[in-house]
Length: 475
Image (cartoon, rainbow, N blue to C red; front, side, top):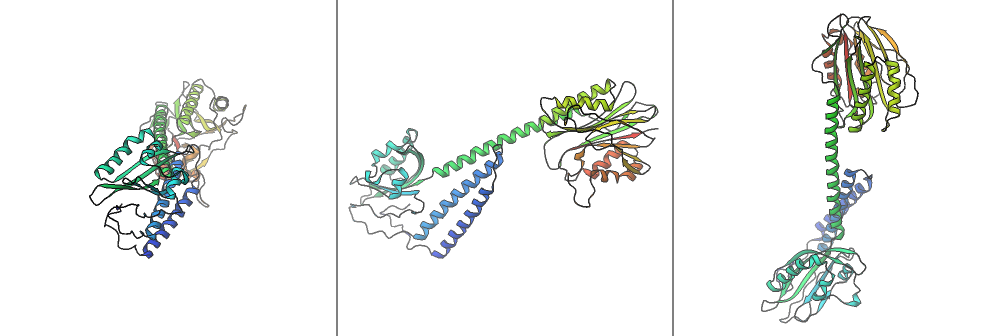
């Protein structure tokens, strides 16, 4: 900022053409940013949305300031009359943009004690022009006590050492409102090089600072929410890993004998979300020599879903070990979920396989039926009656039997294995699984079958996580 006695003045105003073009571009960009701000829907719990909205607000303030500065640049600097040896009145200063009223000028003459304020500065301070401008001594009464030492040092450096002023301070206006002001000033020197006056430009940056604070606050809230999400995800993963069977390779039930099941399973995380759902799979050898097979899914994601899944799977294991058949077992699971402190819905299928007779007894609760592969073809088993777990009190679940042959492959899966809404003419998850029948016939183990399923579904855009369990009947 040049001093009144400085010869460092621009010879002429810049050409209007380029400045007009910049003003037009700035206003167009401002309108586009404002449109994005209006279209940003923010919920109370949406930390990311609040952060985006705060950034848009800050960008709009910056663009308003840029538009103001370009307007003043377009108006140009008014001519300054030659300075007398002893200046009795302050030189004319460039007037701030009347459209904004957020930039004002002040001139404190140390020789005559005369103070000159622009109309805009009276508006910024909320002061009646008839009351006159504030002298330097009166100026301090408007400042926050915490800001007085810093501004005192800046003004002392300006008046005594001839240094420019560049700093911010806060004032409390007579109407009780708090404003944050940014002041840039320079000393005007007399013929002997002493400070004769101080000229300052004061800008009201209250809205800008509030926008910056909102960005910082919303950013901190977003970072906190992300940290909470990471912690919850880690807890959900650890809980899931602790509950689901950690199979490596294949598992055989029973260990030797006719009709032994070759078992393998796999959990496929969602391709679109880092959240862990309530999917489960399990296989258990029962005291009477039969085997229990199950897959299921609870609604929701995160720790609540995985903890609910752990509760369901624990109850299922206990009732299966107690000899409860699949149909009645589903009824007890439904009652437990319906009376749970954290209501949820779940789907499940539970099978009991007798190796002596190779009979599969099974029940389902709103879940895809097991798929049976035999002789190079596959089909879904006919589903017995069964509604979603937790959907209604006192629900009755049917049970049906299916005799399996040596070499049969049984596939149990949750409904998140494929996209929820396949496009027209595209096969859903069941069709794609059934299409693997020829390859399953050539597989040497259940683990090979699981590997084929993962190859088919592992890279697709699943909206949810999924589980698959394969049982191959041995001779």
